[in-house]
Image (tube, rainbow, N blue to C red; front, side, top):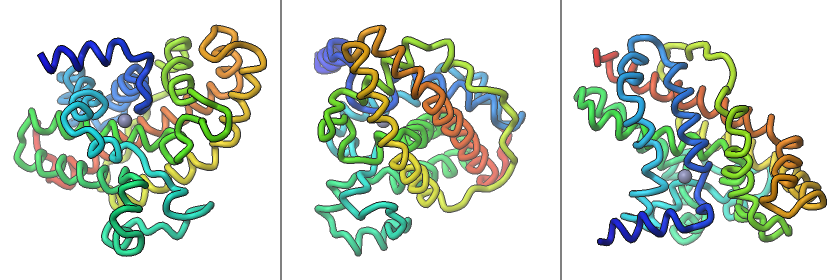
Length: 276
Ligand SMILES: [Zn+2]
């Protein structure tokens, strides 16, 4: 009953303010599979739809199961910790906790460190050659890596309410993508990522978030101009937003796909290139 209720609520919500919409996450994960080296790619291709389901879970079943404890894993509100350009935020979790204390850390979120933890989980699953666990961890890892590539996951103003851009989260990450699905489904040529280990996972996630934060002003300006043309969510509005921000969003999605593939590949190499 509880599961049914949750599913119904998810369906009824306009578009949950969560993340890249589920459609965008699915597009990025499918694309990322094609960017992995052949030995890993064959395995991921064979389980692609399960991998996509696992990618969506942090926004669906994990939210339902863990509530606010899950929420913070999807973002880092940089302004809670520092001021632009945010270069002094430590990438090391222990150093960050020591500097900011528990309540500030809770308000800020924990995307870089949660991502690193899941990456470790994927390496362990690869070492055990536990296929079900590999797909679960690879999907969850993909989700957090992808979220970190959206500018709106780097800020307390994640839904534009502080700047008169109310509702921008779903408009940008879901509605614009859905309206132009064809454009976003093709993220560009897929050269495989290099076969190499990955280091400093948290530091890299932190970097994407910093980069995203720099793109916020342009995004909010574009939203404002689009609102002059049409009501938020209307076809006229979405087309105007797309004209200004469509290619930036696709770049973010392509970077997210490359990085997802790089992290999967790195974990596979770190685990000793198991035959899957
Ligand atoms: Zn998310």
